[in-house]
Amino acid sequence: MSVDRFYTAHGSVQGVMFRQTLMRGAQSRGLSAAATNESNGTVSFMLQGTPDAIDELIAVLEKGQAINSWGARVTRLERIKSGRPFSAYQVTTQNVDDFRWNQDIEMYL
Image (cartoon, rainbow, N blue to C red; front, side, top):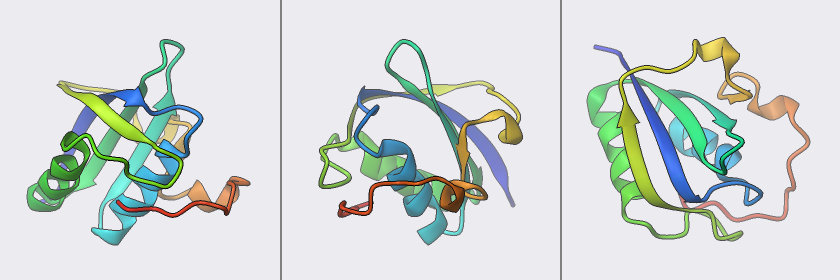
């Protein structure tokens, strides 16, 4: 069974390749994901897939450890009731390869 879950990530999540790392972590777990940088410094995102795969990814984020070599890390994660439609987010697992990301990064997610 596939579900949609929505979150707001606080911490070092902008300017540190958080969205790309999140997309790669989602892809490796068979999830679809979408994320947008918000004007208040947070990142809003959604995950689509099996509850177990989503729970596994969220558990890693909630540890508060760096998820890449640029120091991206979540200090607080809020689960929210709803968010944008998938296509309204800036970066998704479908379009992540269309962006010109810095390749000099190691991802731990």
